[in-house]
Image (cartoon, rainbow, N blue to C red):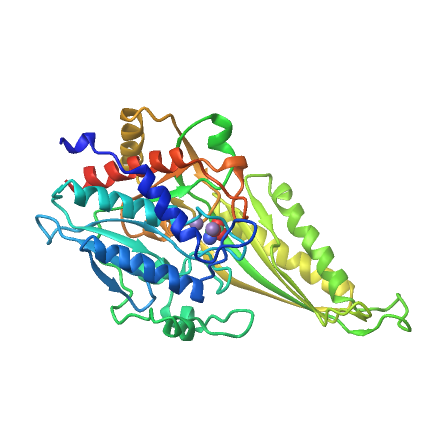
Length: 411
Ligand code: HGY
Ligand code: MN
Ligand code: MN
């Protein structure tokens, strides 16, 4: 069969995704598969089993990134790579990340069963800890591989219970020996759900992001004075939680102050000692700022730091502001984007270009190789929630476009 006629097996992709969704499944139908957890290990083991079933050579690097290699006619040529991440948010969805890994697996399965020989070798990848929810920051597997993040920094990161990244990687048996160091790549393709409302609203099947916004992550600690709520007069309190509350509203106001084209969110907060009859003495919270304009992210960071200092001073509290992650905005490769539009058109899929407000491993990949992403619609525009959902036919459409992007860049 002419390789142009090839199509993935949508039913098999659905079954593969449903099998993965059983690992870490939550009662409300989402997944809880935090990086380097037992559930992540279980999913990794299943992924490696499926890679071996289609005769791929499997390698694991020192960041736990899993690669499956398919030889081409000329293995001296830089390979074509595709993949995403298996880890999820605490109460995440059944498609974020895993669709990109299983979509690539489905493409590889289709290539193999049709005995297609590509000129270039092909590589499928699962990047470790894309979410950064358990071990902040995000995208450390691809970040270290791309040479944009330090391995020892990643190993030193601890989760809320003080468990270390490096130790957990060892515990689940995925601390490989291969150096997590980039090698030449001809192209990197990543299939992913849009995680927003645009494609569904536009009635389009395929999204072609121009790139990914820049992201800044900051950890803030506010220290006040804990005390008994009863005898302590309101005047003169150093209530860390009230100070944090004022700061958090400044985060919400920041995008408007910056003129829009920005989002800013406080997603995580810890209050100590967190007892109803003690004035809070310490609060820790996170700030996530995103914009296509990297300068704007930097300005927002400095404005927030100053605002927080003023609030802390006024309330007799101290404040520590720490930038723990920064990734510049990542424009994708125009010729790869054009390829996606072409292939989607040939397959009769309506497509639409947009900017990705969500971060992806493709951010770091775009710094080291020609990179592009293929989006499919998120029902109700929801993601990072248990109700996250994408139609099976959209998953199939995305995997079909991915299959031909891989083939056409590897033939
Ligand atoms: O934060 C993000 O957008 C991605 O899910 N890591
Ligand atoms: Mn993702
Ligand atoms: Mn995510």
